[in-house]
Length: 180
Image: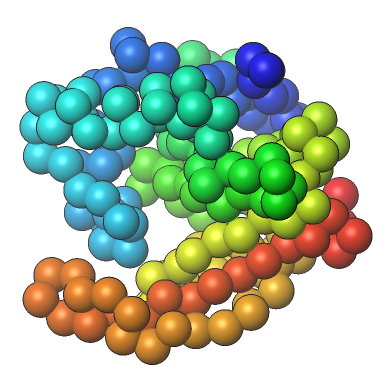
C-alpha cells in the first residue's frame, strides 16, 4: 500500500525520497539532534548507505514509512517523522521523529506526529503505537505526553552509548486512548 502525503494546518509530510539524502545528513549529523537519537552520521556516503537504505527497506518490506516535514508555504525541509517496526499481524508500530534545532519549540513535531498517528490508527488500522526514548530526552517525553502516550516503563541502563549506560523509556498509545 503506497503511503500518502499527510497535510496538517501548518505542515506537509511526504515520503522520504533518495534526493533527500543531503537533508537527512544535515539533521542526523547535528549533535543537538542526535544527542538522544539512535544514529549519527558524519558523511553523505554513510547516510546513503545506511539511513536511506533503512527508509527504502521499510517501504519495500512493509515494516514502516518515514516522511520528511516542511512548512505548507515553504518547500524547505525541517525534520522527519515516521514509523518502523510495523507489524500488521499485531496491529502495532513504533514512531520516531526529529527536527532541525532552529525549528524547536514551535509545536511542529506534535503536529506532524499527530498526522502520522491519525493515519496509523485510521488508514493502517493499527491498535498500538510505541515510542522508545533515551533517558534525559525531556523534549521527546513532553511531545509524547502531549499526544496522549502513557509511560509504560523504564529499562534502566539498557544500552551503552558513547561509553556510558543509558536508560530507555517505553511509551505506548492505544487507539482507544487517542485524543484526536
